[in-house]
Length: 622
Image (tube, rainbow, N blue to C red; front, side, top):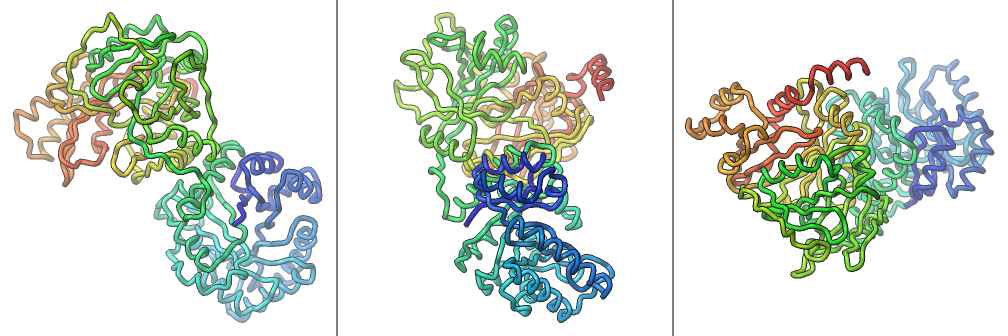
């Protein structure tokens, strides 16, 4: 299959889109007619520039209102067709015709067949081809099987079928009958995914499409049927999205190619290096200015993390407890310093333990990620890394070997180490990152394609100052969990964090502990996020909790949830520069993240995070 992308899938000028598609490695483009209309050059200029970039013009689209029109309108349609065929001769070979939506059109099958045959005859005389596509909201033809029946009965060499995964899947049309279609009659397949939303198909299509791998439609089922019949032609992304219109053409094209590589691998016909098996977070690296470090050091110690090591050659400290490792980077040059200057106290890097760091690096390169090479001192580990959310780093660690771990090679024991209180911390639970709404789908695909994390269903969190969308991604065994949060509101917790930190990425780090009630008693009260008493009154009404246990949770600010498999206890710290920690104790097989408690946590943070002066400043900027 040859890979293409419709120009409507990208923002920017036509020149931007051509260059972005070529840079991402596409073989061709579908030319959306509006892009040509707004272009300052001739059709020949477009064709020449595409060829110069190694791109074929796969199709011109769309040609609307073609079939079933009353006589006066039909004559005008044929005049319009001839003009488009004139244009096609200057551009390419395939004209996309979509099914009729006009109220004054007729839907008698014989009449539709006659019109489609007439279109094909006029195109065929010029050596061109017409492709017919069923729109999910078409007035008479809204199912691909109807479109195929008309194409089959029109029986013309210059007429073929176009399949669009969005139109097919949102109507719930079966895919198995595709096997009955001769592969040569399918002249183009368009791919699009979408979130699972109950809404009008036209509005859904125009505003919420996304690349396969970013949504929840079963695009793979359509492509498997095509592979089964030996179809091997142009496969093209066609994405209408408000978010994509707000990003760069380069980002959309990169996501589109990443989507194809992801799809092909899942279909068993890809060429990506094998996916590494994530084994969890190896360490989380914070950056801070040296003069402000004492406050953060005190927070880490209060959470049971001891400074055990210092870096051999850099102003970098290592804090540990159980399998938790936090790096505090106080360097005053290079990437860490630049990241700190831009974002303040923030998470500059995540390190993923894998079963093969070099394999992870090779896969990341094939997926068009941005590599990063940091300076390495004599005898220190060279750790493969790529850019992640907000320009932070994602390191890949090889399996730890006795005597050859990072802290043993790059660090020396800290002679001034002081033991921290033992809070029974056992390991990293998850990390939550905040991304702009226009980037949410992009990072979902990034983590799916690179590390095999699978997204849970969307959770809509209720923040008193604005809605937050949350998507949790994790490995099947739950060894690595990353939560992505996004909000259209600048005043929500997510929006405030992006504004305060210039979009730093990671906002909160969750750590697992063995006994949260015991741990919470060792955490200073001024560090714990205060929770309203009303929450515990509601908790008592919802769950049959012992009075003594409920009172202990109330006193310590511990939140609670239960599902059929188990229960969850968790607490939050107050925020520092928008960052905060969460301690979690899962009991039994509880699999969620305590989303039911998000509103009370967000309300409590809203009370503390924004002073009246901050609120006034933000209001003036809106």
